[in-house]
Amino acid sequence: MSTLIPSRRFVTLGQFIIERQADFPYAKGELSRLLRDIGIAAKLVNREVNKAGLADILGEHGETNVQGEDQKKLDVYANEQFIRALGAGGECIAIASEENEDLIEISSSVSQNARYVVCIDPLDGSSNIDVNVSIGTIFSIYRRRSEVDGSARVEDFLQKGTEQVAAGYVIYGSSTMLVYTTGRGVNGFTLDPSIGEFCLSHPDMKIPQSGKIYSINEGNYAHFPEGVKAFIRYCQEEDTSTGRPYTTRYIGSLVADFHRNMIKGGIYIYPSTGKAKSGKLRLLYECNPLAFIMEQAGGLASDGRTRILELQPESLHQRTPLFIGSPELVNTAEAYMRQEQETTAS
Ligand code: P6P
Image (cartoon, rainbow, N blue to C red):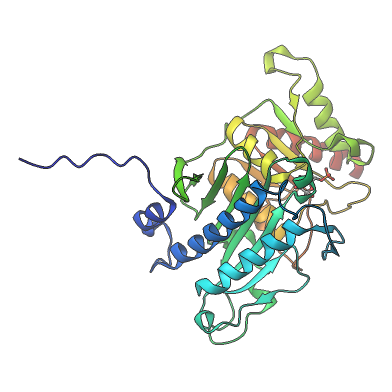
């Protein structure tokens, strides 16, 4: 009599990565350990985010980060947790973080032969912490280019987005999810607090080819490029055959706006504005990882003209405009941007 093996109730992140080792060209457990390290830090950050209103961890840390933004205590805590976890894991040789002006070299003995560098925004949208709005972590993983036995160099980070070996985000929302890609599709894992594990909840995520949501801070309308203004007017025009006017949704927390669009379809735009001529969002640890994920989910990501993943980074904290989401909406927005360019040129 054969024994019936009950079908598994859930697949944890760790089990999934091991079962999908072939997805990662440099397997030998390296990706497993990198994502395990990120998952550990995410669980610790999640614990603090969930009690932020209770613990004396709210409010200003009294410092400002390299972006000149007020650092919340949770920003600092999150940055420390990801640096500590990646440093202890032995697979990462250096980190570029939104919270640090220069790259952070991991000098521990376990990391001396590490082959990867990680770009990270440890807690994006942190201005929303005090009002209990979802926030997120965004990360991007590259193979180092410098010699394994030498120190990491800034060139290890200044690689095009097409060179990423993995990318992902954590969203600390009504539930906490970790979503990642290694270039073989996108998979989402929801944290089950009862067992402390991220469990596969959104296999093979695909963004709808179109959508009815446009996400942009219209408070900056006066300073938008004409092509963006024309796209917004397109979204607001009455045309029942195309389901317009569309709906505007803007949470002001990139990971939350991005994740909603991944599920429902839509477009998120942070263009150049009067205050931010190159846009506000950073290429290395916000736009490149989200663009990698979006393309793997069947969407598009550009700066309004050029594919994000093809942009050549020149500095760690470089900014870029971002148009990202359902392909039909991104293509329409880019058409209005081209039209503006042609009008300006003529
Ligand atoms: P604005 C948060 O500071 C952030 O980097 C993203 O999470 C968010 O989408 C954007 O800035 C909001 O910027 O200028 O619209 O407040």
